[in-house]
Amino acid sequence: MEFFTWVVKLAKLYMPTFLSGAGTTMLLAITGTVIGFVIGLLTGIVRTIPITENMSSGKKSLLKVVNRILTIYIEIFRGTPMIVQAMVIFYGVAAATGVPLNRIGAGILIVSINTGAYMSEIVRGGIISIDKGQFEAAQAIGMSHWQTMRFIVLPQVIRNILPATGNEFVINIKDTSVLNVISVGELFFAGKTAAGTYFRYFEAFFIICVIYFVLTFAVTRILRVFERKLEGSDVYQLETKEEPLDAATGN
Image (cartoon, rainbow, N blue to C red; front, side, top):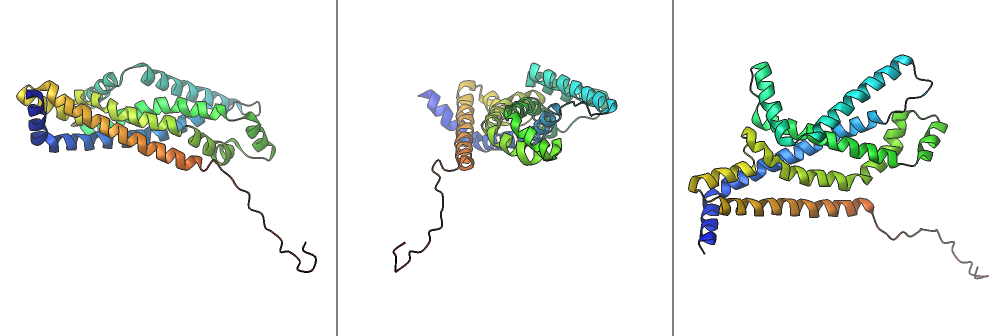
């Protein structure tokens, strides 16, 4: 009974703080996912540019160097925890420049580049999954690689990777909790503030758990509706123009 009493008390006292933290969490997750998607899209496209025989040696060398740099970026940010990345970037930039970063801006930067590393592999996989015959057909009619990507490949890729992108968004809602180590006032940080005041950690984080679940559940359902809209109807009907019957012959 005491548990529910404290849950109600903390909810009444700190609900504005919890809602503010939830708003910051959604800001970080949405902004970071959108920027990360753009980073991943561009990175995935660059990494799938074919090296052909008719390329100049300079272009080949440049493309190889860029691919190597992008590969290093992806491996580092996929191979290290976001909480470590947050500490290194936030405190590292401050130590190197002597100017502390804005905490919200640093949080968006960290989530964005981390998401970009994962999205680049998702995009690359989506591009590779497109039938090679479509690339060959585009080349046959004189389309460049960028035209092929823009008009043929990317519309299919974006539609195919939408579920994975939505999954990254949901993951980011939860993973923003690690930004409390650099004192970003997101939902987890708000929970620590409330819990530390009365030393009621179980009750405070029970409320935080419920809020996280509501956020992720609502976002998941909205994304599924959006996916079904893009898929369209499973039933297709061909429209044919019927010729009027001849009154005399009946034909």
